[in-house]
Image 1 (cartoon, rainbow, N blue to C red):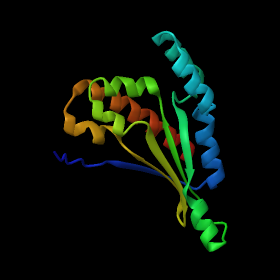
Image 2 (tube, rainbow, N blue to C red):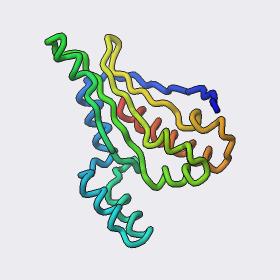
Image 3 (cartoon, rainbow, N blue to C red):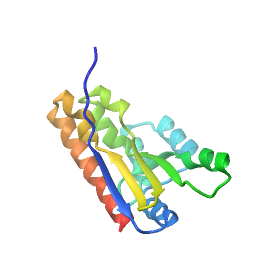
Image 4 (cartoon, rainbow, N blue to C red):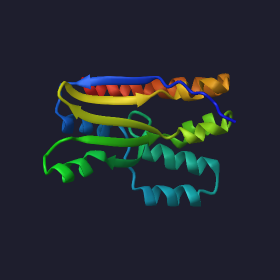
Length: 163
């Protein structure tokens, strides 16, 4: 079976330096020690224990960083230059993901989400593919409402980091 998915990509452009944009994101997104976080999740005796571990790990945006990939590093090594600066952040909230996945299991393919931060001639671009666009073909109102809320959080984060 093949499913067609049309992606809505949201972008914000900042005149701030790349490092300042990254710092703004880092200031709003929790950055837990992932080994410790995984241990807490695995050893939680109850769902309340999982909620507690997540709440301690998210930042003010209600999100946490799962991974980061410095995509520009390989390009910089090749060129010997200081540019380009390209960073992919994988962020989310396991409790939000749970709410989407219980209605649409395929949502697990899209969450956590990616924010791409890259420096170009016209500024620093922050890019995000809306979760609602990934889940729209499944036509599940409950999952779509959770996705809309997540999109709003992430888009607010992008706008605030860019300004």
